[in-house]
Image (cartoon, rainbow, N blue to C red; front, side, top):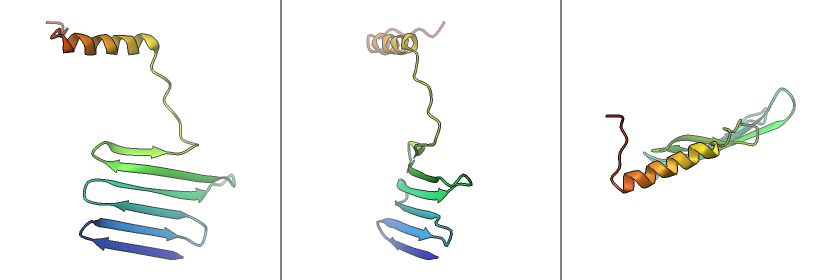
Length: 95
């Protein structure tokens, strides 16, 4: 197993690799971090995840992760109209 870590006033960095080829690394500070990890699944495939985490939440990326379906065009058009209406001072709050 290999492992390294550093901490100073700017933040931290760590990484490790296990004997069964699990690898991980992360870099960050008190409010934001990014990193990744990889492992071989039971099916023999290599799975890798990269991520950022912080004020915007945890945002993972990986070729095997599910992806949300696209927003339907009618919804996108309605959201755009809402934005235009609000910019013009028009608010529809059902009151």
